[in-house]
Image (cartoon, rainbow, N blue to C red; front, side, top):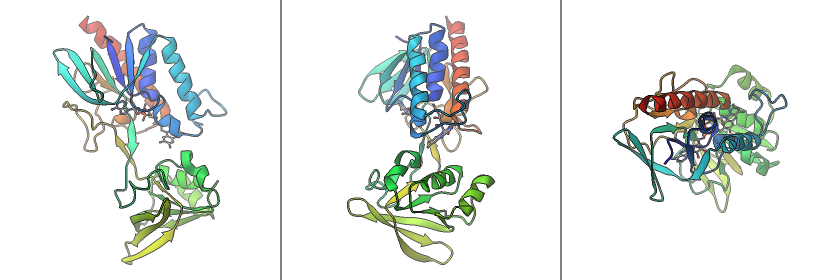
Amino acid sequence: MFKTIIIGAGPSGLSAGIFLARDKIPVLIIEKFAVGGNMLLTEKIENYPGFPNGITGYELAKNMEEQFLKFGGKIKEGDVNGIELKDNKKIVKIKNGEILECDVLIIATGSSRKKLGVKGEEEFTGKGVSYCAICDGPFYKEKEVAVVGGGDSALEEAIHLTKFAKTVYLIHRRDNFRAKKYLQDEVMKNEKIKILFSKTIKEIKGKETVEKIVVEDLKQNKIEELNIRGIFISVGFKPNTDFLSIDIKKDEEGFIIVNEKMETNIPGIFACGDVIKKQLYQVITACSEGIIAGYFAEKYLDSIF
Ligand SMILES: Cc1cc2nc3c(=O)[nH]c(=O)nc-3n(C[C@H](O)[C@H](O)[C@H](O)COP(=O)(O)OP(=O)(O)OC[C@H]3O[C@@H](n4cnc5c(N)ncnc54)[C@H](O)[C@@H]3O)c2cc1C
Protein backbone atom coordinates (compact mmCIF):
# COMPACT_ATOMS: atom_id res chain seq x y z
CA MET A 1 0.00 0.00 0.00
CA PHE A 2 1.32 3.45 -0.95
CA LYS A 3 0.39 6.36 1.30
CA THR A 4 0.37 8.62 -1.73
CA ILE A 5 -0.55 7.92 -5.33
CA ILE A 6 0.13 10.45 -8.05
CA ILE A 7 -1.65 10.09 -11.38
CA GLY A 8 0.55 11.33 -14.24
CA ALA A 9 4.34 11.44 -14.66
CA GLY A 10 4.71 14.85 -16.28
CA PRO A 11 6.78 17.58 -14.59
CA SER A 12 4.07 18.35 -11.99
CA GLY A 13 3.59 14.70 -10.93
CA LEU A 14 7.34 14.05 -10.87
CA SER A 15 7.99 17.20 -8.80
CA ALA A 16 5.32 16.24 -6.26
CA GLY A 17 6.84 12.75 -6.19
CA ILE A 18 10.39 14.04 -5.67
CA PHE A 19 9.25 16.19 -2.74
CA LEU A 20 7.43 13.31 -1.03
CA ALA A 21 9.94 10.55 -1.79
CA ARG A 22 12.80 12.69 -0.43
CA ASP A 23 10.85 12.92 2.83
CA LYS A 24 10.60 9.10 2.84
CA ILE A 25 6.85 8.98 2.14
CA PRO A 26 5.98 5.83 0.12
CA VAL A 27 4.80 7.22 -3.20
CA LEU A 28 3.68 5.65 -6.46
CA ILE A 29 3.21 7.46 -9.77
CA ILE A 30 0.86 5.86 -12.28
CA GLU A 31 1.53 6.86 -15.91
CA LYS A 32 -0.40 5.70 -18.95
CA PHE A 33 2.01 6.66 -21.79
CA ALA A 34 5.55 7.80 -21.12
CA VAL A 35 7.35 9.41 -18.20
CA GLY A 36 7.80 13.11 -18.99
CA GLY A 37 4.31 14.02 -20.23
CA ASN A 38 4.12 16.98 -22.58
CA MET A 39 7.81 17.78 -22.02
CA LEU A 40 8.46 14.95 -24.45
CA LEU A 41 6.71 16.95 -27.18
CA THR A 42 9.17 19.81 -26.75
CA GLU A 43 12.36 19.82 -28.78
CA LYS A 44 14.17 22.32 -26.59
CA ILE A 45 13.05 24.04 -23.41
CA GLU A 46 14.77 27.39 -23.13
CA ASN A 47 12.82 29.06 -20.34
CA TYR A 48 13.40 26.53 -17.55
CA PRO A 49 15.88 28.03 -15.07
CA GLY A 50 19.28 26.46 -14.59
CA PHE A 51 20.01 25.56 -18.21
CA PRO A 52 21.51 28.64 -19.90
CA ASN A 53 21.75 26.80 -23.24
CA GLY A 54 18.32 25.19 -22.94
CA ILE A 55 17.64 21.48 -22.45
CA THR A 56 15.67 18.99 -24.54
CA GLY A 57 12.31 17.97 -23.10
CA TYR A 58 13.50 14.35 -23.18
CA GLU A 59 16.62 15.10 -21.11
CA LEU A 60 14.72 17.17 -18.55
CA ALA A 61 12.16 14.36 -18.21
CA LYS A 62 14.92 11.76 -17.76
CA ASN A 63 16.63 13.89 -15.07
CA MET A 64 13.37 14.34 -13.14
CA GLU A 65 12.61 10.61 -13.37
CA GLU A 66 16.11 9.70 -12.14
CA GLN A 67 15.80 12.13 -9.21
CA PHE A 68 12.41 10.65 -8.23
CA LEU A 69 13.65 7.04 -8.45
CA LYS A 70 16.85 7.92 -6.55
CA PHE A 71 14.74 8.91 -3.53
CA GLY A 72 12.88 5.57 -3.64
CA GLY A 73 9.76 6.61 -5.59
CA LYS A 74 8.03 3.99 -7.73
CA ILE A 75 6.49 4.33 -11.19
CA LYS A 76 3.86 2.01 -12.60
CA GLU A 77 2.37 1.88 -16.09
CA GLY A 78 -1.41 2.18 -16.06
CA ASP A 79 -4.35 4.11 -17.44
CA VAL A 80 -6.43 5.32 -14.49
CA ASN A 81 -10.10 5.18 -15.39
CA GLY A 82 -11.85 5.80 -12.11
CA ILE A 83 -11.52 7.03 -8.54
CA GLU A 84 -13.70 6.15 -5.60
CA LEU A 85 -13.81 7.22 -1.98
CA LYS A 86 -14.08 4.67 0.85
CA ASP A 87 -14.06 6.19 4.34
CA ASN A 88 -10.82 8.21 4.37
CA LYS A 89 -9.19 6.09 1.63
CA LYS A 90 -8.95 6.91 -2.04
CA ILE A 91 -9.48 3.98 -4.40
CA VAL A 92 -7.72 4.22 -7.76
CA LYS A 93 -8.99 2.01 -10.58
CA ILE A 94 -6.78 1.10 -13.53
CA LYS A 95 -8.09 0.07 -16.94
CA ASN A 96 -6.57 -3.44 -16.69
CA GLY A 97 -8.79 -4.13 -13.68
CA GLU A 98 -6.24 -3.43 -10.94
CA ILE A 99 -7.46 -1.51 -7.90
CA LEU A 100 -5.09 0.43 -5.62
CA GLU A 101 -5.69 2.27 -2.37
CA CYS A 102 -4.01 5.32 -0.82
CA ASP A 103 -4.48 8.02 1.82
CA VAL A 104 -3.57 10.95 -0.40
CA LEU A 105 -4.14 11.29 -4.11
CA ILE A 106 -2.47 13.86 -6.35
CA ILE A 107 -3.99 14.39 -9.79
CA ALA A 108 -1.30 15.53 -12.24
CA THR A 109 -2.79 14.33 -15.51
CA GLY A 110 -2.08 17.47 -17.58
CA SER A 111 -3.94 18.32 -20.73
CA SER A 112 -4.29 17.14 -24.34
CA ARG A 113 -4.64 18.93 -27.62
CA LYS A 114 -8.21 19.59 -28.76
CA LYS A 115 -9.39 18.01 -32.01
CA LEU A 116 -11.00 19.84 -34.91
CA GLY A 117 -13.69 17.22 -35.29
CA VAL A 118 -13.76 17.21 -39.10
CA LYS A 119 -13.99 14.37 -41.60
CA GLY A 120 -10.59 12.79 -42.28
CA GLU A 121 -8.96 14.01 -39.03
CA GLU A 122 -9.13 10.66 -37.25
CA GLU A 123 -8.34 8.64 -40.39
CA PHE A 124 -5.18 10.62 -41.22
CA THR A 125 -3.83 11.16 -37.70
CA GLY A 126 -0.16 10.17 -37.95
CA LYS A 127 -0.47 10.17 -41.76
CA GLY A 128 -0.34 13.90 -42.29
CA VAL A 129 -2.51 15.11 -39.42
CA SER A 130 -0.37 16.12 -36.44
CA TYR A 131 -0.83 17.86 -33.09
CA CYS A 132 2.88 18.60 -32.56
CA ALA A 133 4.95 20.64 -35.02
CA ILE A 134 8.07 20.20 -32.89
CA CYS A 135 7.78 16.43 -33.13
CA ASP A 136 6.70 16.05 -36.76
CA GLY A 137 7.99 19.20 -38.52
CA PRO A 138 11.13 17.54 -39.94
CA PHE A 139 8.94 15.13 -41.99
CA TYR A 140 7.77 18.02 -44.17
CA LYS A 141 10.99 19.31 -45.75
CA GLU A 142 10.16 21.49 -48.80
CA LYS A 143 6.45 20.52 -48.58
CA GLU A 144 3.28 22.58 -48.27
CA VAL A 145 1.70 22.36 -44.82
CA ALA A 146 -1.11 24.07 -42.90
CA VAL A 147 -1.43 25.11 -39.26
CA VAL A 148 -4.91 25.62 -37.83
CA GLY A 149 -5.41 28.05 -34.94
CA GLY A 150 -4.87 31.63 -33.85
CA GLY A 151 -3.31 31.45 -30.38
CA ASP A 152 0.33 31.51 -29.21
CA SER A 153 0.92 27.81 -29.91
CA ALA A 154 -0.45 27.96 -33.45
CA LEU A 155 1.76 30.93 -34.37
CA GLU A 156 4.81 29.40 -32.68
CA GLU A 157 4.21 26.17 -34.57
CA ALA A 158 3.83 28.00 -37.90
CA ILE A 159 7.15 29.80 -37.30
CA HIS A 160 8.85 26.56 -36.31
CA LEU A 161 7.58 24.78 -39.43
CA THR A 162 9.16 27.37 -41.73
CA LYS A 163 12.50 25.75 -40.81
CA PHE A 164 11.41 22.76 -42.91
CA ALA A 165 8.36 23.41 -45.08
CA LYS A 166 8.23 25.34 -48.36
CA THR A 167 4.95 27.08 -47.50
CA VAL A 168 3.00 27.21 -44.25
CA TYR A 169 -0.68 28.19 -44.52
CA LEU A 170 -1.81 29.60 -41.19
CA ILE A 171 -5.58 29.14 -41.12
CA HIS A 172 -7.74 30.89 -38.54
CA ARG A 173 -11.52 31.18 -38.27
CA ARG A 174 -11.45 34.78 -37.02
CA ASP A 175 -10.07 37.85 -38.79
CA ASN A 176 -7.41 38.51 -36.16
CA PHE A 177 -5.12 36.49 -33.91
CA ARG A 178 -5.35 36.01 -30.13
CA ALA A 179 -1.60 35.38 -29.95
CA LYS A 180 1.00 37.72 -28.40
CA LYS A 181 1.89 40.77 -30.49
CA TYR A 182 5.55 39.78 -31.03
CA LEU A 183 4.42 36.42 -32.48
CA GLN A 184 1.93 38.19 -34.77
CA ASP A 185 4.71 40.47 -35.99
CA GLU A 186 6.94 37.47 -36.65
CA VAL A 187 4.37 35.56 -38.72
CA MET A 188 3.44 38.70 -40.67
CA LYS A 189 7.01 39.28 -41.76
CA ASN A 190 7.83 35.63 -42.51
CA GLU A 191 7.62 35.16 -46.27
CA LYS A 192 7.00 31.41 -46.00
CA ILE A 193 3.80 31.92 -43.95
CA LYS A 194 0.57 32.62 -45.83
CA ILE A 195 -2.14 33.82 -43.45
CA LEU A 196 -5.72 32.79 -44.26
CA PHE A 197 -8.15 34.63 -41.98
CA SER A 198 -11.89 33.88 -41.65
CA LYS A 199 -11.50 30.35 -42.96
CA THR A 200 -12.35 26.95 -41.47
CA ILE A 201 -11.43 23.42 -42.41
CA LYS A 202 -14.36 21.34 -43.64
CA GLU A 203 -12.55 18.11 -44.53
CA ILE A 204 -9.12 16.52 -44.77
CA LYS A 205 -8.66 14.38 -47.87
CA GLY A 206 -6.09 11.93 -49.23
CA LYS A 207 -5.38 8.32 -50.18
CA GLU A 208 -2.64 6.79 -48.00
CA THR A 209 -1.68 10.16 -46.52
CA VAL A 210 -3.06 13.72 -46.52
CA GLU A 211 -3.20 15.33 -49.96
CA LYS A 212 -5.59 18.24 -49.61
CA ILE A 213 -7.89 20.12 -47.28
CA VAL A 214 -11.30 21.57 -48.02
CA VAL A 215 -11.46 25.12 -46.70
CA GLU A 216 -14.52 27.34 -46.29
CA ASP A 217 -14.21 31.10 -46.59
CA LEU A 218 -16.62 32.34 -43.92
CA LYS A 219 -16.88 35.87 -45.31
CA GLN A 220 -17.43 34.99 -48.98
CA ASN A 221 -19.27 31.72 -48.36
CA LYS A 222 -16.91 29.97 -50.76
CA ILE A 223 -15.36 26.50 -50.60
CA GLU A 224 -11.88 25.81 -51.99
CA GLU A 225 -9.31 23.01 -51.87
CA LEU A 226 -5.67 23.46 -50.88
CA ASN A 227 -2.98 20.94 -51.78
CA ILE A 228 -0.92 20.19 -48.68
CA ARG A 229 0.99 17.22 -47.24
CA GLY A 230 0.62 17.99 -43.56
CA ILE A 231 -1.89 19.70 -41.31
CA PHE A 232 -0.97 20.74 -37.76
CA ILE A 233 -3.95 21.27 -35.49
CA SER A 234 -3.36 23.78 -32.72
CA VAL A 235 -6.77 24.84 -31.46
CA GLY A 236 -6.21 24.63 -27.73
CA PHE A 237 -5.96 22.22 -24.85
CA LYS A 238 -8.43 20.11 -22.95
CA PRO A 239 -7.70 18.98 -19.38
CA ASN A 240 -7.35 15.22 -18.88
CA THR A 241 -10.18 14.92 -16.36
CA ASP A 242 -12.68 12.69 -18.19
CA PHE A 243 -11.68 9.71 -16.02
CA LEU A 244 -12.74 11.47 -12.81
CA SER A 245 -15.79 9.61 -11.58
CA ILE A 246 -16.10 11.55 -8.31
CA ASP A 247 -17.46 15.00 -7.73
CA ILE A 248 -14.29 17.11 -7.93
CA LYS A 249 -14.96 20.80 -8.53
CA LYS A 250 -14.00 21.88 -12.08
CA ASP A 251 -14.58 24.92 -14.24
CA GLU A 252 -16.81 24.83 -17.33
CA GLU A 253 -13.92 23.52 -19.48
CA GLY A 254 -13.07 20.72 -17.04
CA PHE A 255 -9.95 22.25 -15.40
CA ILE A 256 -9.79 21.30 -11.69
CA ILE A 257 -10.26 24.14 -9.23
CA VAL A 258 -7.69 24.19 -6.41
CA ASN A 259 -6.70 26.63 -3.66
CA GLU A 260 -3.17 27.95 -3.05
CA LYS A 261 -2.30 24.65 -1.30
CA MET A 262 -3.31 22.72 -4.46
CA GLU A 263 -6.20 21.21 -2.47
CA THR A 264 -9.34 20.23 -4.36
CA ASN A 265 -12.75 20.36 -2.70
CA ILE A 266 -12.23 16.75 -1.50
CA PRO A 267 -9.98 16.35 1.59
CA GLY A 268 -6.84 14.38 0.74
CA ILE A 269 -7.13 14.93 -3.01
CA PHE A 270 -4.74 17.46 -4.53
CA ALA A 271 -4.20 18.55 -8.15
CA CYS A 272 -1.33 20.36 -9.88
CA GLY A 273 0.05 21.32 -13.29
CA ASP A 274 -1.80 21.74 -16.57
CA VAL A 275 -4.90 19.94 -15.27
CA ILE A 276 -5.80 22.83 -12.94
CA LYS A 277 -7.46 26.15 -13.72
CA LYS A 278 -4.73 28.80 -13.75
CA GLN A 279 -3.13 31.55 -15.80
CA LEU A 280 0.17 30.09 -17.02
CA TYR A 281 0.73 26.58 -18.40
CA GLN A 282 4.49 25.95 -18.39
CA VAL A 283 6.99 23.40 -17.08
CA ILE A 284 8.21 25.69 -14.32
CA THR A 285 4.70 26.45 -13.05
CA ALA A 286 3.78 22.73 -13.24
CA CYS A 287 6.88 21.90 -11.15
CA SER A 288 6.22 24.53 -8.52
CA GLU A 289 2.59 23.46 -8.16
CA GLY A 290 3.82 19.86 -7.86
CA ILE A 291 6.12 20.82 -5.01
CA ILE A 292 3.31 22.72 -3.27
CA ALA A 293 0.96 19.72 -3.69
CA GLY A 294 3.67 17.43 -2.26
CA TYR A 295 4.27 19.71 0.72
CA PHE A 296 0.58 19.98 1.67
CA ALA A 297 -0.06 16.29 0.91
CA GLU A 298 2.58 15.51 3.53
CA LYS A 299 0.92 17.91 5.99
CA TYR A 300 -2.41 16.17 5.32
CA LEU A 301 -0.82 12.79 6.07
CA ASP A 302 0.61 14.19 9.33
CA SER A 303 -2.89 15.34 10.30
CA ILE A 304 -4.53 11.92 9.81
CA PHE A 305 -1.85 9.69 11.41
C1 LIG B 1 4.45 21.30 -28.11
C2 LIG B 1 4.64 21.84 -26.72
C3 LIG B 1 5.71 22.69 -26.44
C4 LIG B 1 5.90 23.21 -25.14
N1 LIG B 1 6.99 24.01 -24.88
C5 LIG B 1 7.22 24.46 -23.63
C6 LIG B 1 8.38 25.24 -23.32
O1 LIG B 1 9.21 25.52 -24.18
N2 LIG B 1 8.54 25.68 -22.03
C7 LIG B 1 7.64 25.38 -21.04
O2 LIG B 1 7.88 25.76 -19.90
N3 LIG B 1 6.53 24.64 -21.30
C8 LIG B 1 6.30 24.18 -22.57
N4 LIG B 1 5.17 23.44 -22.84
C9 LIG B 1 4.17 23.22 -21.76
C10 LIG B 1 4.61 22.10 -20.79
O3 LIG B 1 5.01 20.97 -21.52
C11 LIG B 1 3.43 21.77 -19.87
O4 LIG B 1 3.01 22.95 -19.23
C12 LIG B 1 3.83 20.73 -18.82
O5 LIG B 1 4.31 19.55 -19.42
C13 LIG B 1 2.64 20.39 -17.92
O6 LIG B 1 3.04 19.44 -17.01
P1 LIG B 1 1.99 18.46 -16.26
O7 LIG B 1 2.81 17.55 -15.44
O8 LIG B 1 0.96 19.26 -15.60
O9 LIG B 1 1.23 17.68 -17.43
P2 LIG B 1 1.76 16.78 -18.62
O10 LIG B 1 3.13 17.13 -19.00
O11 LIG B 1 0.69 16.85 -19.64
O12 LIG B 1 1.80 15.31 -17.98
C14 LIG B 1 0.62 14.64 -17.61
C15 LIG B 1 0.88 13.14 -17.63
O13 LIG B 1 -0.27 12.46 -17.12
C16 LIG B 1 -0.51 11.29 -17.87
N5 LIG B 1 -1.93 10.92 -17.76
C17 LIG B 1 -3.01 11.62 -18.19
N6 LIG B 1 -4.15 10.97 -17.89
C18 LIG B 1 -3.79 9.83 -17.25
C19 LIG B 1 -4.52 8.73 -16.70
N7 LIG B 1 -5.86 8.68 -16.74
N8 LIG B 1 -3.83 7.70 -16.12
C20 LIG B 1 -2.46 7.74 -16.07
N9 LIG B 1 -1.71 8.75 -16.58
C21 LIG B 1 -2.36 9.78 -17.16
C22 LIG B 1 -0.14 11.71 -19.29
O14 LIG B 1 0.16 10.58 -20.11
C23 LIG B 1 1.09 12.60 -19.03
O15 LIG B 1 2.30 11.87 -19.10
C24 LIG B 1 4.98 22.89 -24.12
C25 LIG B 1 3.87 22.05 -24.39
C26 LIG B 1 3.70 21.53 -25.67
C27 LIG B 1 2.54 20.61 -25.95
